[in-house]
Image (tube, rainbow, N blue to C red; front, side):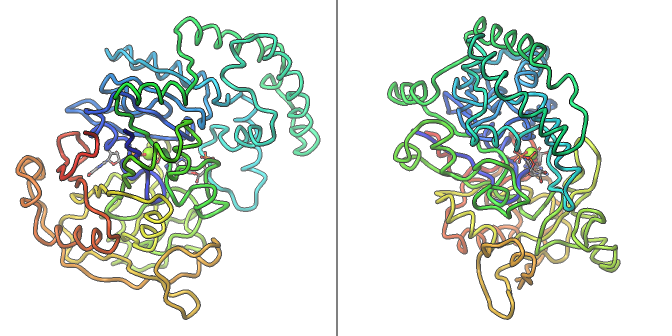
Length: 451
Ligand code: GDP
Ligand code: IMO
Ligand code: MG
């Protein structure tokens, strides 16, 4: 059977932690889209692991697969593997031969395009978009090609002059060593040799199907989130792949019936966060430079509230330290995600972060141009015009969350349970677990979908 873990909001919901939690009973963990743009955190006791490309199942020593729907930077792949080995883990990682390769020119073009845009997307700069563009444009290089030097050279000789022309003639920049065919060929051929030596490549779909046929449990790990899905997200402020459930089929090679017979678990952060630009109807105050049109005029109370949630949740960029945009939980977003993914269960985390507030709110519907709607509208401009109607809840106190986690669901403060049960009933989707802290043990499991 399969269990698919999917972000229901704008990324960073806590997918890595949930994969680690439910990963105990899994045999294989597979990433099905995205690349090293992800940042999945697994906290086990005193140890914190930040994974950008490898599936979070590596921490538990599970067989991990980077699926065909992913884009792979081999440099990150080997760096991440080596770093985990240095920390005493013994990762067993396979990479789909059909996955596409991120080259240095993809990263360069990612940066150039961002600079050139009037309204930046605020990408991670990892070359994700340009690599998926080449995949769709049928000029990409796949992991399997790295193992065949002749094919690799032929593909590079075709694509690199085109990239040079884009850099020089379209953007008026100078092409650097990232566009030297010989250099690229040598470096990437060597990556191919290492992949072959370590017997890391697999025919993803048939490999996974054979594991399932042998009775193994496969956990599919989504990256990013529904609202930054290229089809179902707030285009163009999106990533270039499908984090939504359909992506788990195309990105692994398992059929929709296989994925659909399994469980699809939506990961929900108990409030809203957003990195970078784009609409965020339930935002509290704003972050100058990121929140469209915000100039610090929200007023002291709202600023204080935003700062409280941001500080308690540690909502600052891991690399830049930049404050993340924060806001109230947004049900129209979650309804959109529940439908697009067909969630069979939800995990709601960060309940501890909201503790200590007098009042906690949930956005229950939107007013769009005078009409009440209960899910995200199709255009980003419409979403930007939505005004949120809130329902207010009494806050809950700060408690000993470790004790709550060991005692179980009934130990969660009553007002927090009311909050959780409201979300569960509005989404008509059962609550599978509640996160009350970042650690593996700080989760209350009501249902474990991985048998
Ligand atoms: P992902 O990208 O969806 O895997 O999520 P990230 O790892 O980027 O961000 C989630 C952050 O919240 C990480 O730092 C987690 O350790 C942390 N986290 C996860 N669940 C909880 C929770 O229930 N409470 C608190 N306080 N932190 C949590
Ligand atoms: P995890 O898996 C949050 C955002 C970027 C940018 C947009 C496009 O940790 O939840 P990209 O580099 O993918 O082309 O950037 O998507 N983004 C994420 N935001 N969490 C992520 O991953 C993200 N991955 C990409 O900030 O707005
Ligand atoms: Mg993250």
